[in-house]
Image (cartoon, rainbow, N blue to C red; front, side, top):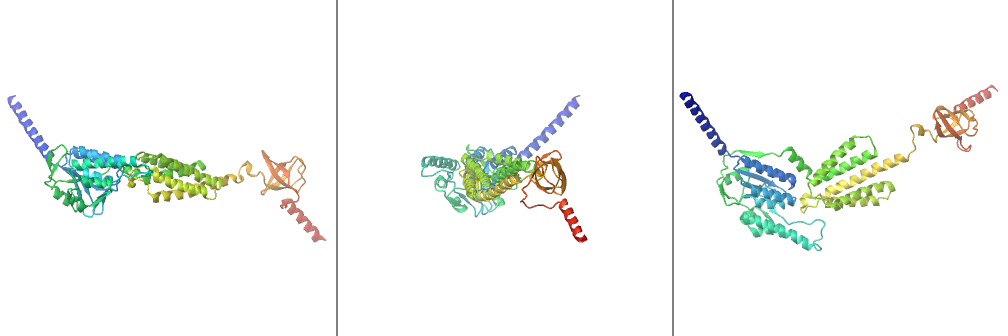
Length: 459
């Protein structure tokens, strides 16, 4: 029994020691995570950055490198990204790359908020001045100044926390100044310049980072595995739909398809495509700040397109609708950054074809409704035929190459022209047509002409 207990203790000690060795090995292995951020700053990209930081913390990564390339984006999403960077337990490196890339507007703020800010040769950053939409700066100076002061104070705070050039950081906001990688490095806006990711990791190896809590961490990146973070399907869809140009195009496609379905019920396919497109557009727009004036102008434009087709406004209503839709599209997304708004090219490129398509659909629908019915019971009403026999009150008529039983309220002699005024079961209700109207040849006429010709030949 003693030997059994000793054996069990020995096995337990070996297992414990083995597990400790595994634990030491696991903790010693720290990957370098890389996120390629090549997008506008919007809720979808903010979610991607948040997940990447969380993943880096869970894996106890040495560092998370955000390879940044962005024209800017939404202020709220920028704040969300910066908050996650500042709260991260893992050092964050923001690297503007490759050569030719830029980190403009909101991208500049994200860059200077990182533990380490780096840029590749041939890149630039800055131009973070807020832009007002639908506001006259002269008439709204107070409101605009508040927005500018708030942005400037936010940037000053970040630059101070990260020991960067506060004056130049503020100038990027107030004066829309931009900086090359050389200027940014020389003026202490960034920490280093690296040609590519390998050189960046090599330069960061042994780099000491001072965190916001005062703790100093030395990076050991050389030789560590590099793991790229891929966006999930949800994040890819969010990024696609959060593009205001895509959301606008989907919305217009949805409206056109539903409009076609309403004018041609039962087509089904336009209804399905239109419903899906419209729902995707609404979801995309709900991620963006929407200006109600833009919505009203787009609705007005659609109304003007319909009115043009119905009342024939000689193009005036149609042109008004195009202008209304273009202006509505341009002010629809209430974002301070032009990068996150609908581009003028897309606005015009969608407005004109939509006006043409709506006009054509409604014009054809109205024209078809004005045409006389040519099928069913009503298709024969109004047609002209010939009385093959006397109709008093019943007889037989020849219409459309067919013999019909006919009824008339007045006597109609054989060979007279008749007009169909109604239908009673399989009998036509007819009336006599003026004898001065051109006469249509009938079977009776043909037979009479044949007999007359025979008599003449006999003489």
